[in-house]
Length: 147
Image (cartoon, rainbow, N blue to C red; front, side, top):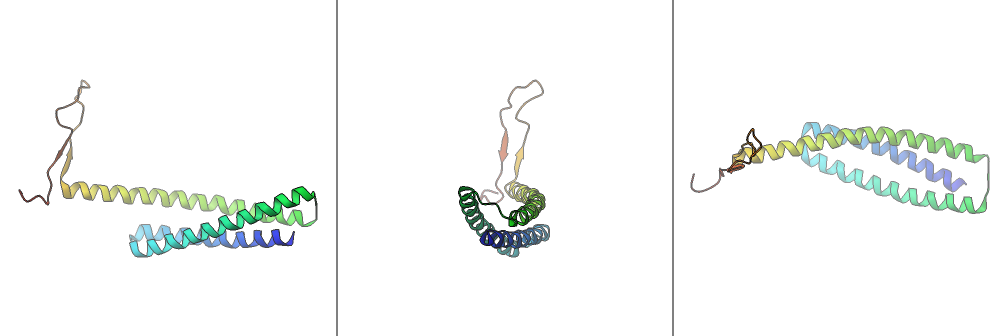
């Protein structure tokens, strides 16, 4: 049981670190600092891998406890730690969803910039009566020698 408590405590610490790193990553998205963003993403990946490993250990221990059908007063403490982890996981999900939106916006901005450089013009592929037009995209490349 002590091993389970230690793993839960480690998980709690790692989840707090993950939350902090995700918030820092969010600031890097906003500041558009790609180098620091990459470093932060690497840290987050390592934390997620560590959490995955701890989760596997925790599941093995819980399975052994179920097979032994042992109940101890420490079960209440482990449930309390598990509840704290669940609350932290929800907070992490909110920050992660925000980061996902920021990443999508960044990708759209990059796509827009590429379209501007290649002068892609999008005409409506359909006329008002629903028929397709003869040309959907007209591409004129800015870096073409013929310009």
